[in-house]
Amino acid sequence: MLALKDSDQVVRHTAFALGRKCWPGDLQAEARVLDALNILSSPDKRRIEPQLHEGRRIQKVEGGWFILNGQQYEDMMRSINRRAYKAAKQAEYRAKSKPLNGEVAYVKAHGNGDVEACDRIAASGTDPHASEHLPEACR
Image (cartoon, rainbow, N blue to C red; front, side, top):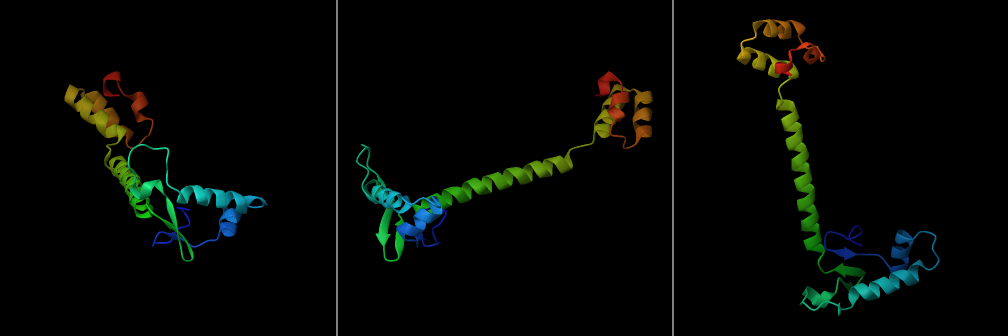
């Protein structure tokens, strides 16, 4: 139902339509949906701590079902998606700014004072296997 709700948190489907979406081809789908709707619209009596709306998840409204905590779920998903997007962008940024193997090796060789290794690295250019020919200290 969360996937089917509109921006006003209302799912505008009948029990029959919900059953067809959830269990296509199942002849008992409407009965199963009606049972589920009954459970979701009833108070949750199993929990001891107080809950919003007495534990109800949905409420019958004209034309469909109102998801009582729909905005909360929407905000939660928006936050999770934003966090994943930012992580991917940061990884992309770090990959772009990461120095090449040859650059790191050259700096190490230069810092060690190994002029021959520096010349070899500079001569190798952009060879992706250049690090195979470097001294162990430069890898």
